[in-house]
Length: 192
Image (cartoon, rainbow, N blue to C red):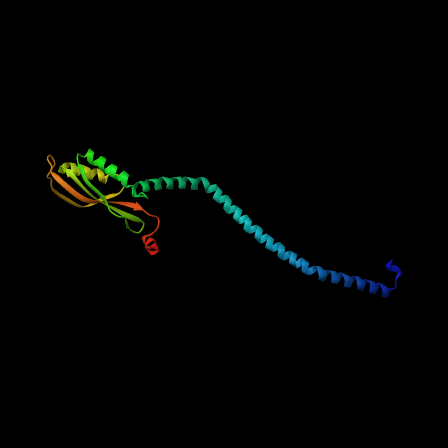
């Protein structure tokens, strides 16, 4: 069909076709550039998500190890709470001291809990006590107190001659135990 046209008309047709192709290329070219940008952004997003999936798989592989660590830490926490409970437990402590005094042949004359004294991550719980018995029995009693699972410090021990029949000494002392608190004393004081 083009061979029927004159050379001049053929050049015009090819010129118009070339112009149409150039026009179509310019109109499509920005879309191609945008698609390339979109593809690059999608590839970056895909790489980021693949990295996160890989991190998740690594964590999943470590899960049994982390669960064992958590179980071991729970056991340690239970042990620490035996030594440093989160509550005063005055009733339990009084029963234990009374029972310990009876086992040591001492009479518990007084048991006076004081108020809690806040420290950094614990509170001191002082208790004034007075017992009557023999000197040797007092030693047994204090030895057993030192072996209790809860921390108890005994200080200001004062020993005097007993006036009770069959008893040789009266001993009074401060027994300080401790209560764990999970907030620092500065925070608690700031709120009061």
